Length: 95
Image (cartoon, rainbow, N blue to C red; front, side):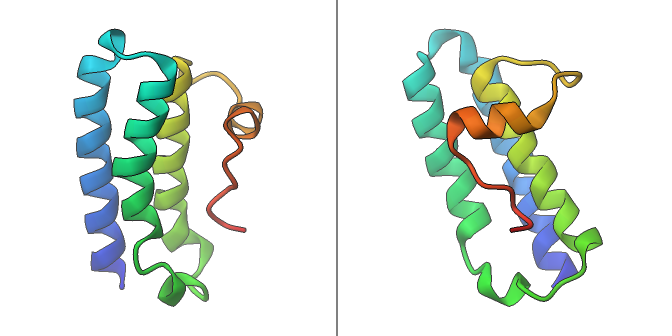
C-alpha cells in the first residue's frame, strides 16, 4: 500500500507544479476547480483501504492537500494551514 500512496503523492505534486506554472493566468475559481478535479480526484480514488493505515503513511497525503490549499489561495509555506483549509471548506485528510 505504501507504493500506491507514494505514487499518488508523486503524481499530485507533479500536477501541482504544472498548475503553479500557469497560476497567474487563472482566476481563483478556475484554480479551485482545476485543483479539485486533478488533485482531489487522485486523493479520493480508492481511499477506503487507507482507513486503517498509520498516520505516518497518511501524512504525505495531507502534505499534498496543504500544498494545494496554499497554491489555490496564493499563500506561502509559512502561513498557517488550518484557516486556509477552512476557507476552502476542505476537510483534513486524517479525519
